[in-house]
Image (tube, rainbow, N blue to C red):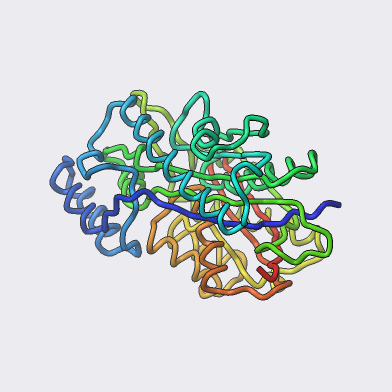
Length: 356
């Protein structure tokens, strides 16, 4: 069996940054808010756990944009530049040049393009024309993990690497002013970002790289589909999330993670590092409760949520980057990546940390 190694991991955000206080002041001034909405914005933005978010905008006024064509153009502009910045960081850490990349897998759910962003990223990075590539759409916040699995599959099938895996979301292009509490929550917690991973086949007798990709698992639970999804309204993406999302997310990722652990004869105690999608503090608390983990175990997920908000699919890789930089895992220790998204879907990846 071929061994897949994670050689480089890069993250990036758009340059525009807004504190939650900035956001509250702007929403209060420019949105027509009912008293209940104003109170909910205040509680989330001023009393919540997020400090600020990076947004794919040129100025605050962009939050008022409603024209679908201009929103899509903004998605393309910032999705493209942020993805390329993350990719270059991952390539640099891996010690890999763009001309060496043999495959590219990309995912997003916050903007639709045809051709997908693979075409633009390949051009900007100067990738060769013979690369295999795949654009993934519509998988929501969990998509980075099946992206990694698809990239690993490319490597196993072809025997040629490295492969570049990219997740980018410009959630700010889907801000949707409205009176429903779910829209207030969405407008208050989602941010923008990109994460890139360089996967490669291990070299014989080599201990290089950041981690070994051991295995993947997924679950699809259509009975919960209406609790978390995008829908189109007036040509624009409109997020829908129910109050049940934390419980459903915790239940589904626990089921998927437990199956993956059982397959390898492992228990939760064998996992030293947990990279859980930071969908919100209620989500993380419920995941910890359902998995039987101490809250401190998920401190890196809480840290990413505090500093970036929920960036959808790249978020779990931001958490892994934080674990690598601040946690400093020891060689041989095992880690678990967990994320969930629209569908309702849940994903897990088992990794084993290397010497770096």
